[in-house]
Amino acid sequence: MLAKILSSTLLGVDAYPIDVEVDLSNGLPTFTTVGLPDAAIRESRDRVKAAMVNSGFAFPLKRITVNLAPAHLRKEGTAFDLPIALGILQAAGHINAESLQHYAVVGELSLDGRVKAVAGALPMAVAARHQGLAGLLIPAANAAEAAVIQEVSVFGVETLAQAIGFFNGTHPIEPTVCDVQSLLERQATYTEDFADVRGQHHVKRALEVAAAGAHNVLLIGPPGSGKSLMARRLPTILPKVSLDEAVETSKIHSISGLLHGDHALVATRPFRSPHHSTSDAGLIGGGNIPTPGEASLAHNGVLFLDELPEFRRSVLEVLRQPLEDAQVTIARAAMTLTFPARFMLAAAMNPCPCGMLTDPKHACTCTAQQIQRYTARISGPLLDRIDIHVEVPPVSYAELSGPPDGDTSAVIRARVNVARERQHARFAGTATPHNAAMGVREIREYCQLDAAGERMLEQVMTHFGLSARAHDRIRKVARTIADLEGSDGIKIAHLAEAIQYRTLDRKQG
Image 1: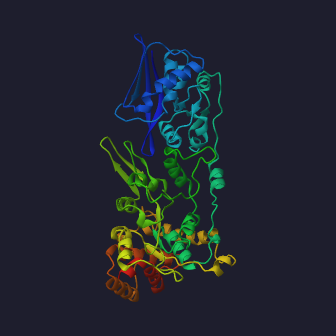
Image 2: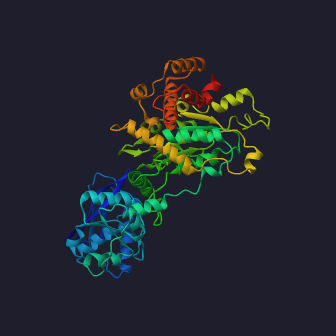
Image 3: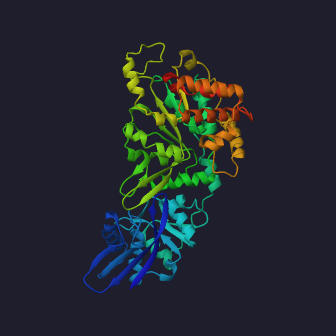
């Protein structure tokens, strides 16, 4: 007897349809799985056998062949346990074959027959929608996550016996319903707020400019000056996540197993802060079958690198591609996968190895050579890709003990939204989402300076020996400052403020 169950497998951030074909034939009892399965799939025979027996079904003593088609795609994970078990039961005559053909099935089996959660439920629901199927049968723990895709019915099951009853019509299951807009609004809250930050008005202004134009930012200051505190609040002043962005981001978190029943949708801007000991694969993704790294998990949000010079140089250099292209391409012998990685880079560092160079109350113990070696750990090309460099001074006791003296995140975000709306109108009909993404042609068209501005920028470029990329960054930031002020043209005050945000370039000059 031959049976076929529809399922799916993950490649990159997308799920691809897989036919799980099961053949029962006479001969010595064997269990063979073909179609490029990994070790976890090959081990499924033991889980499937125990789950069937403990659910009250006899395991057929026949030659069992399982084919995962198409055979050229490599498959991994435990999500094929449930479809393999249902295929065996259908081939043995225990399940209505007609009903199975209209549903995709995924799920891992426990030895006692329970259906356990799997990674990637959201992209699997997207794949079922594209196939035009009647529904998706999925572990109950993943049902809320998959139900975000409303064009496909999602049925959550707890046990193998429940899944069998569903297809035989003896155990009807109500589809899981998700009010996506309500979920998005309910979960779109932050626990941090810029009102918690005392003092540091010019730094908060720089972060507002960065958020308004999606510019990368580097905070330089002694330990305890509030660099990490402010960086963690950067997502709270970014525009609210749209539904499309939420689904796009949630797909990445889904395949990484980071979504849970009570948080089925990433409704806030992601904030990822990897440790400086992370590897390049941990930062941008990797593995035999590549999986997303921190850069992709920060998609549509903020990637924060604290103690930037402590990261290995090779790790920092791999950030060049995602910073320029907003995606990560990982090539392996068997496949090449691309993960989205459009994020704002926020980084922090001390001004010197001891950290006290800019602290007026503590003496720096570093030599000029040590300081030079410390800052040289960040390559020039990477530094050029960071639009804004700003010094973070220590906070005085009077500021710490005083009342709140700054705007809340909601007030700042309102100003950022106005600036972003001007950019959306400016770039309507193009692929450019914001000022930071402008290309050479757009910089030439939208970042024009008057005669006084051209003279100022020429003097700065000549005196500090800035690169062509730094020249473009200054113009982009000046354009964003003008947008925050509601100005159609870039004034000399906007340009002067943008130049002040190139701290490291001015020091090197």
